Image 1 (cartoon, rainbow, N blue to C red):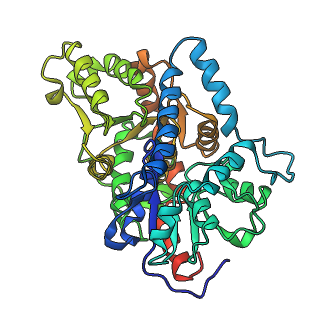
Image 2: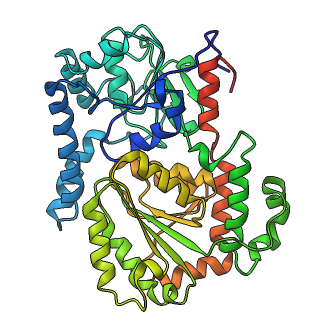
Image 3: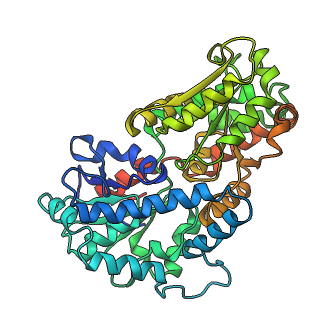
Amino acid sequence: MNTFKKQYKQAWIIDVSMGYGHQRTAYPLKHLAPDGQVISANNYPGIPSSDKNVWEASRKFYEFISGFKRVPLIGDLCFFIFDQFQKIADFYPRRNLSQPNLFLKQTLGTIKKGWGKHLIEKLKQNPIPIITTFFVPAYMAEFYDYPGDIYCVVCDADIARAWAPYNPRRSKIKYFAPTSRVASRLQLYGVRQENIFLTGYPLPNENIGSEKMEILKSDIGQRILNLDPKGLYQQRYMTLIQKYLGTLPEKSEHPLTLMFAVGGAGAQKEIAVNVVKSLKEKINREEIKIILVAGIKNWVKNFFIRELSNLDFENDPARSGIEIIYAKNMKEYFEKFNAALRITDILWTKPSELSFYSGLGLPIIIAPSVGSQENFNRDWLIQHHAAIVQNDPKYTNEWLFDFLKTGSLADAAMHGFVEARNLGVFNIEKVLKGEEI
């Protein structure tokens, strides 16, 4: 195992506010930062306008492409061309993949022109370790000779060449890998083994508790009862359940609840509405509760409100078992989202960084991927039997309850909990302290 002699109490936690993925990954690590403040590399106080403009151009382009993808024929073609720049090469046969790609060269070219220097010079005033959830700030820190340790948290189940440094054998950047495939992939890219730590993805502590996972185990116990209403899974696997969770409660304290999480670009919100339409009668009969996640996108929230008003519910949707999660800032959103997860039984989402939330014992219903890396996240979920691919949303009222009757979703919940590395935050803390993981 990797060990370090240095003892750290704090680290700069850096994300980028482009979509939700990098910020969601940083949020559980905020307690390590001075004053608990996460730094957004593209939007921190005092950022030079020249730096901000580079970041903004990237963000707007990605959100445009993600939204444009829904345009028939030409949208898919444009996204396909864009996706080639972030495409992940086939893993087999194993071979040397350390040759830098065009995207990496362009990124470093912009850094050499001064992009990010202001941020790194500020951080040098207190050179504690840097932990970034995106590779670009790590490259900025290394190029501008940051004297402290530099760590990069990977937030997908597999990664493209751009995540590894230009000269990986000579780089000081260290990686927190969420999966064994990421650890192996980094070695194919030329990263030294001693710079790779297989920690697991950093899941929120409020959903886990201590390393004993007392909160998480209690929540999964409630969830299993809702996911296995006929008790078929419990009959077959009670020994396994008791080994990992202990004795289950007699009754769940919340109704069967499905959460649909819309991505940062607002993609797939139409799928969520079709799900609600299909489940309308069951919602009215209080057989299921729905949580629609609009995040910090006011226009997505308004879209949900408008569409729900057209569905002619017996009561106001909010009183009919439909909740919309919306917040004006990211901190508030993550707080609401993580709290709602504790009473969520099924998470329906595209295979983004939320794929790792299967480690919370949440069975995932996989919406269509957006981007090459999400295809690998989808495959990772399926390989671990922690998810099912969505059927036609218009008939959710039929196929979803078939899965419930057979206990298949309870099985997915337990597979995710047992198979995923769900103590990522604790393992990252151990690395910073120089302890073995």
